[in-house]
Image 1 (tube, rainbow, N blue to C red):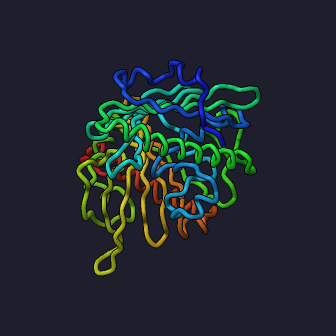
Image 2: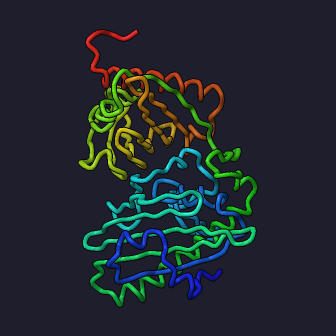
Length: 342
């Protein structure tokens, strides 16, 4: 599948060009897909390490470890991307992208700094008949070995974008891949776990609730099942940071961890949490100012292991009861109660 842009596309001024105005390298790629921009948009929104991954052709993913394969369905929990959100990237242990600009369903711009290199990555979706012309532009400044970056980096960029194009085409042609409109309410396939959502009003501002969440050492105080903390990375709660906790009672304990997928201070925290023997779950906490306090919405989605395979109405009810208790504990800590709640 060709990803070669036209001369006009190379010469065009795109959103995000001003993020790295002194760029010495610009890599342009472009391809066409048989779906409108609003059907493609949610696939680009959920891109990212420890998010929806990076879509590649099925034959390539067959040679890839399962945890590195891109999702083949839309994840509703990943559709709440916003400007300022930080997304982990594969460009290094601590590499991330920050969302710089969003104009659904046409423009998504990311920016990043990697050591001495500054870069921007723009995704532009333009209607093309009944389909979409996708143009991607990577701009870099501060590259020390420019010729090597142009030759080798350019070849790698074209190869990965070609894989993306084919991977997206496969997903678009699969049943129920496109859910219409903006895709934010995409239906899950039967192989996906359901979700358990609970809400609570807290008599404390979002910043106070966030202060509790941002202190990784308090994790075992409000998360039901976590018995004690073993370590918290200094970067917590930035995207990609981990905390290490245990569950159970001595002498029988299991060591697990939680990784930040999305971090937006005083607004949104998404964790990928391991909880043996039940597998992994994605836990989403949204904070919204309300009536002088905070409305917390907590959503948990089993994504791997037994918790996903056996998810049903009974287990979902159990999750809701557990997370209702978790929010009660979180509220008590944020409100700094001096008397028991009722």
